[in-house]
Image 1 (cartoon, rainbow, N blue to C red):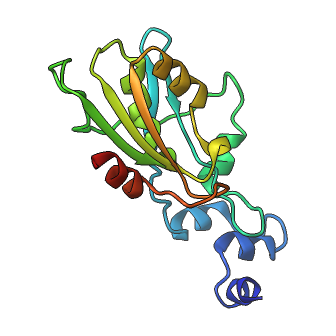
Image 2: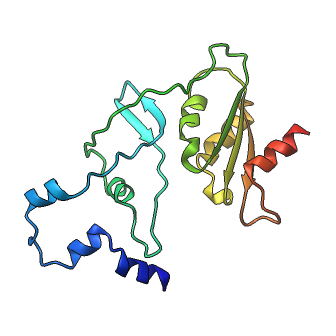
Image 3: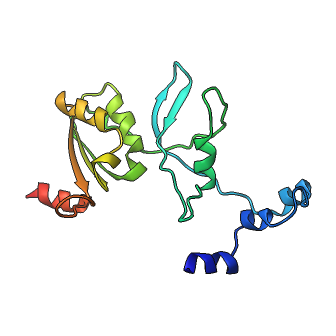
Length: 179
């Protein structure tokens, strides 16, 4: 098993720590010597300023052994009422000022997050969503997209790469719709 061999020749810090007796590493040494974790950036799926809440859309990363990534695991175990701290970064991603201008949205996976805030806003821009996922069950915000499509506020073009008669990707949809 190549995963097992890689784990033995290149073990993670977490794996090594679990091999030691409990509390055998002084916390001051660990904080001083352990490499810092890089920040994890998430796209905001919506903001409610009145309620001081931010919604993120997070894909849960799991390793082959079923272990979730550090941030995925931490977020998964947050409970209602728990406080979490974060920071906001500046972005140039915004809707056009002219609400008659069509908006083309291209994404796969969690890349759909910032677009959700667009369609939840009260703008009247026509929106065309080109999105790729494995199958219909993996389509995030499916009920919102369906409702907005019925209202004529969004025109979804969804590419499914699994479980259909033929694989389709976003670039295939773009070519298909350009004809």
